[in-house]
Amino acid sequence: MDQREVPQGKLTVHMSLIRPLKFGSAALTDTEARALCGSILVDMMGGLSVSLEGGDISGSTGLYWHDPSLLLATLYFPRTLVRLTCEGSGDRGVVLLRSVGQSMIVEHGRSRIEAASGDVVFLPAQNGLRIIISEGGRLDCAHLPEQAVDQHRACLDVLMLKTVPAACLPLHMLTSYAGYLLQREQQTAEDVAMMVSHFYDFLPLLSQALGGAAREAAPDNRLARIRALIDARLGDGGFSINDVAEAEGITPRAIQKLFSREGTTFSRHVLERRLERAKAVMMASGERMSIAEVAYQCGFNDLSYFNRSFRSRYQIRPSDLKRQVRPAA
Image 1 (cartoon, rainbow, N blue to C red):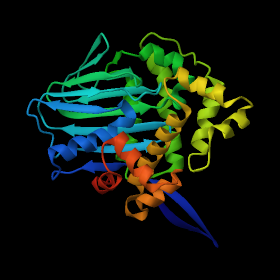
Image 2: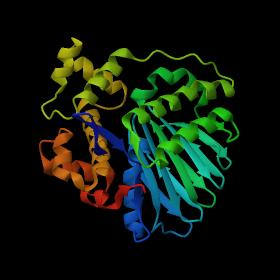
Image 3: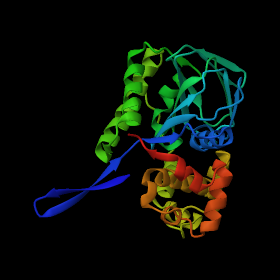
Image 4: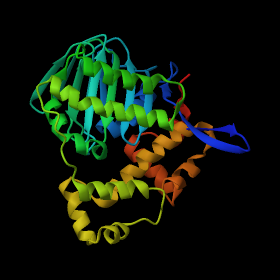
């Protein structure tokens, strides 16, 4: 994120500029490309393994864009049969997948979903899946985090494990907003908020197009409040479950039970959110912030622990990821 000064009379206003990011290069080896692609997609779809008919993804490139309410990525694979196996991100969010220029098959449990070029498949982010792209090339991915989709559960249930045809007008509008965010060189925070809001506004229309109702579901208020409080305090290295318990007027044990029902723990959720925030800040800041500055800004009091945790989650060192990512031109 860049900070630009805009003179206004005698005042100087700092305006945040948000940029999409490019990752990868023609010089990447197969091992480096696999690690980089995995680190980009792990927050969307969990751990990733890639299998190609040719066996080599060296030189793979892509685009990445991040907001707390929406993650977007485009990957360009060699033009050969590509198989991706994803473990699942562990959250109750939603993943959207689109192959451009060739057909795609997505296997989720016992479900086998076929999609033509340009069609979009809606999938639960929590579970593992397999993706088969007949001739490689471009794969578009979007991740809608659980805290952002709680109020849209009803319409998303209609879309889940379904293929939305490329010709569907609401889908065309939704993908246009995603494309704008991925390709627009500079965006203000106001632009981003408006575009992300419009992106979500089209979900009920998509649901209606597939025969569903436009009714919105009420969020789980307590868990949603706790997640929001965690996100607001990620930069506080002393933040603990006791702070949440005091704010909510419940015991730490009750909070642990809420996260246990989601298949995780409070501390694991906080660590993963801090790592996601650190990855986004590090990639966006370029050379303007050191890895230590990013770590401390995101609530890590121990740089060694941050480096170990980052590498464990993303299978790449922070310094290597930082080196491979740059603002989109």
